[in-house]
Image (cartoon, rainbow, N blue to C red; front, side, top):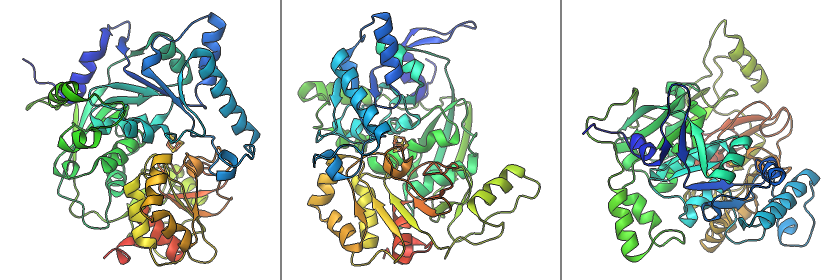
Length: 467
Ligand code: SF4
């Protein structure tokens, strides 16, 4: 029997009609996650054609991109301030009611960023095909699922047929040896990977992260790594499920129980690349000597160790434009650079362990004068747990803003934005021009680095605070 990769195994299980030179494969989708931004047009198409949803039981809707993070606008009776956001929220409510879709609504205690609540609820499981009209669907690959973002038109196809037309991507193994040192996080690891292979390095491929450095990570950390696969251009990122995965999933609401759980785990154990399985590409990175990473440019591949200097690339016009936007010079160190905003949030780094890490830095300290620090939990469950464990109190006492869950300042659709020219240390995943607001200068980093910058008001190696 031919040795197969993890990706091959999941792909093969879901092919309804194989691809041919003329036609893509028809792939069955186990779970369709949908939200308020990329679904309105798709529901309109269904309506205009008189179509129904093919599988209501495999469709889950929530709202996250446009939702306010201000408590009064969610629970306090105040209307959603931003009209465009209010309209999207209302439209999703109408669409879900009209088509019978299971909606985790604005005031629901299970609400949060779609890529955080899928795993929290246990809807994300090994071996599933999972799609969502959002690039960072790759997050769910941390469980050994094949998960990727789709466009608005494809959202309509999946709603109507539960299938998708796909050409099979190639496979790319990323071997991660060694172990992260204290104060160096999964975010630093994935930024280093993107720095190594480049923002187009994974184009046309599904990445499989493997090796000792990956096996040592918690599920929260694995999700951070897979989340940013798309920033290396990859279609998806995957990690083989193991005991860490099963322990995370056991007992969650959507996960099978009793004998069904035992059967599921027995099956999930087979979801790993066979010895000798052939990958189209391979790369490796040693985690042992990594330091905290920070971006200096306008894509996540423009990244460096925190102790380094902005590189020089004479004659590279794109690079020069990025540095001009960021207001930086080649050869300049980033340490000690003043920052004005700190954002701890997003589907990359707003899980409980991320907030615990940030709180370790902020405990008993104050946010520096002139710095705005926003802490936005990834879900209402994370929010409740952070409050129960005293993390929220640490943030508030430090002078940070403690908000309701949502995408928030990751992309600023709800009005949480960074002003033009301001430097923002952000735990999100994209530092594109204007992503956090017109003229905003985003620097991506871990929750520890972000919290350290909040305390000092300058870019700081977080290891100074983590002993
Ligand atoms: S937090 Fe950011 S990257 Fe994640 S789903 Fe929301 S907008 Fe997309």
